[in-house]
Length: 289
Image 1: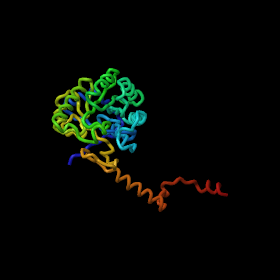
Image 2: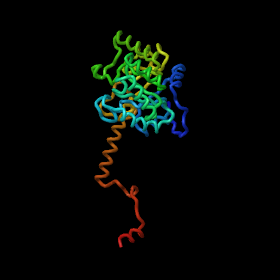
Image 3: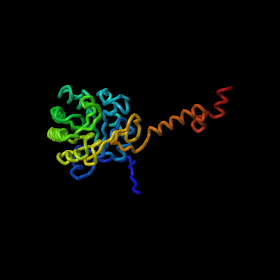
Image 4: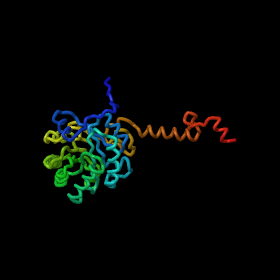
């Protein structure tokens, strides 16, 4: 049986960069990416050797309890980005631009992208959309900010798409996605998320463009993979997408631990003597006399 060694060393890895992403694709090495929203999770991922951490707008659903990603604000995203940047020093950190932070105007897109680097400690930003976002992508990159694209299922367009539905399942839709991928590559994006698209299409697109593709629900033919960490750990109990491999069930473990704690408090098993601070008898006698 094979075993996986997880590094817990405090020695810092070499910083992962956008150039390292492209080099991994050229060498045929898979890119591992996960979402994080807080300091301890980011630190654990960084020590495990993750290539990249996305401070995803999935925060809205899995951490803040919203029904979809639309309500989360720039200020909320930056709050969590700062926490992640304090915990991870080696991974490439990507801030997910929230709904309406880049759609209004190119100037607004550049300003908000800059906030992710200046105030949030991120190395790059991600935004959703294909050809309709090309001008914003070019403008952000012109300001010196690396951009990761995102096509296929774009959760911020959930109402326009008619729900969380797989994309690119017809020949016409597949052709449009391939065109969008090439447009984003030409605009200067350093990588591209492909979400909920047929595996054979994702693999085909990955071979047609020079920038790395990061798949989520897009099969093994992409250059890397990303998952929402709360899904991977079993922390989000509302639903688990079909494409998620759940590596743990922390929600059940948390429920068990909380129930045991409540029982111990109610039966006065906790706190026990070993959890208690005591005074010496001499000091106590002096106090009560």
